Length: 383
Length: 154
Image (cartoon, rainbow over all chains, first blue to last red; front, side, top):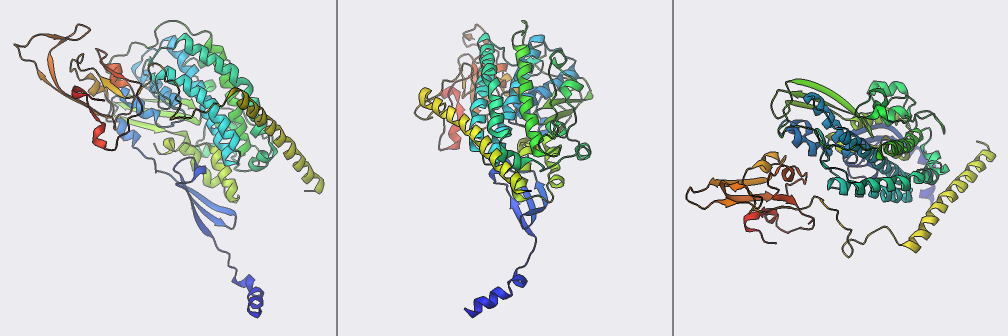
């Protein structure tokens, strides 16, 4: 008895406070893939969080130098595997500009419809997994349920469920049938009221708001210094969308808004702001699909591109707006059938780079919330 | 934070959570009346749409050994060997009426390397190489994934 008292009396001196190094991941469900975050913690407070990437490195850039331009298409699909269509569109546009090839109007319409559907699918995944990170399992299931419908449309359209290889250089791989057009219309009609439902379920839930507001604040200066684009930038209150500001394909002809966060629930640029931008973007994507789906022009679905794609000597840089930001391809051609050099600038890599800066001094649980709101896909971070 | 503010947060949490629970309740009732969306896989299967990209199949009768599929393949998993036909041999035609000038000796595809991109079947001039709807072909030996289409048994 006495010894316990003795022990208790000098407890404060024995209790040592020291920094603890924790490895979060690479096998951790809330890191959204094989991401390892080395966290230096002081109690519950994160002092430093350094993301370790590279577990999924597949040498995309080097590999592209050894296959022909069409052969890169399946690899491009595997960059951001949740938004394969958008990636492939970026690659196709880059090579078409090098070739000077013309894309038929029908192909452009199909491309934009499909890539907007993919954007919804990708944001649904982001919404679902973010709910999962915050402890809302239902949101995850609902997100997957609706994403499944998009995948079904894509499966009938392209033949695959995840890695489509659908946007080919010069157009699309297969034509769209009236049956599939009807399927897309049905989906739009079904999904339109669902977004508000999801907002009620998760976005405006008080527990969710309390967990995500005032956390992971990205100010504009950080955004610009890291070169962030897409949802990160719009979540910080800066109106920048390539579809509007540097339009490609038939985006100038469609009417849509660029949603920007306003710091509704807390500070501008926090996790909740990024979440709400995604929810609004889904609505805008639906708007774009609605405008285009009825007026798909007749004609060929693939332009005249030779069997062997041989762009002239030169270099080209092109960027497109993907669900996670701007995906850019820089291609150098030496006139042969294979690219001389390919550089891929992925938005996810930049997004995850900011992690250390925006999570210093937060709780460990808030770190999970921040990683979720960055919405990274490790396939694109590592390439 | 005052006590009143704290109670307000509690109230908001209860109200917004109840709102969410109402949505899940609606779904719960609908599932009970019209059935679940989930498909119990091994027993029930979803219909596979036309043109879906499953296991590759080559109809060697129609193959003219042009090797365009092997060139188009980004992972180089198609192995073709062909010899020139004997000049004395009888002329051989595909179903489409294309004359075969080469004698196909080997047409193997390593399915374990295949990435199902569909570039080979798109390049095929006689449409003899195509994707089937088959998607269940697990084997215990990796070598069995090398499909020999000249002696194809399944």
